[in-house]
Length: 392
Image 1 (spheres, rainbow, N blue to C red):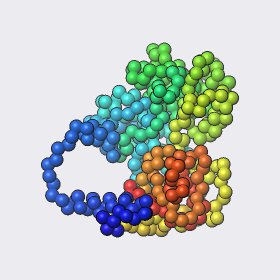
Image 2 (tube, one colour):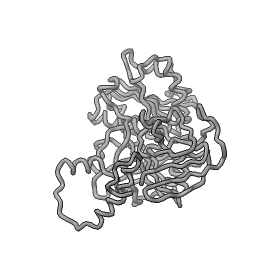
Image 3 (cartoon, helix red, strand yellow):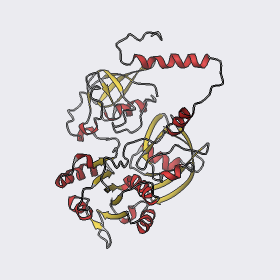
């Protein structure tokens, strides 16, 4: 395609101009250019990627560790409590990304530091790789801070009931730290569900903050143990009512997908306005057959013809995998961040074939569906496909 050919009706036409223009830039003679202050600030706050180094590792439980990541140049991008980093990983022949919520306070980013907590998942590709391979000094490539799971006083209530499960405690730990430091103005009650007392992550830090900050309260809920000082069972409407104020309040949820399904059902009994219920992205599903509305695939194995820039390649994969996972297993570097359908960074065009998109993960813009755009991270192939994918 000629660089000046902008009359095409193909909505992906403009993306194919990028490799051509980058080649022109590479051939051009270097010139000293002035970086204007607004551009410099934008680059610092919203870098394309961040090069980090593992500075320290802390064992939390038998299955979880917290990693302190420092910017290699001494700085990292600032973030709001509740945001995440998308980590770029090469695991064998697989090139993939994984989102991890930032557990540290925003103030620590001014010192060039992030902290993330990684919990081992049975059969998990990224979590097990990180836990088994990262050591002090390991180099890490990450995105700028991303996500919308942040407190916004114009939208959210003055009191937030945080419902956390497992490693879903990390964005709330960051928020609690921000409240304790005076960076956020709200009252936070965390209902933290774990199977057993030994599974609780960051308990010492949570108790320390709650002990000195009157605006933060932490309630531990155990589903498989009954102990004094702990709530017993699951976090349901009755438990939320017990710790919620009589005035209006928001509910923030972060944890495994199963917790979301259960708590969402319980929240119906509370008759909260929809804007007062907030979800962190829940990650990928690995069982499309268990998802509501799944019609069943035509074949267990599908072929996907991938057009990316000026290249074309056909790969084979399982209909149990999302399109994104199929591409990654074939060593195709496709863009992705949240892996839950929310951010739209992986947005691609479906040229032909049939797919399944779970209703709860379909966050496409209204115009995307009629023009054939999908988010591969939450889309499952039902037949052979042809897709156009942006360069990563």
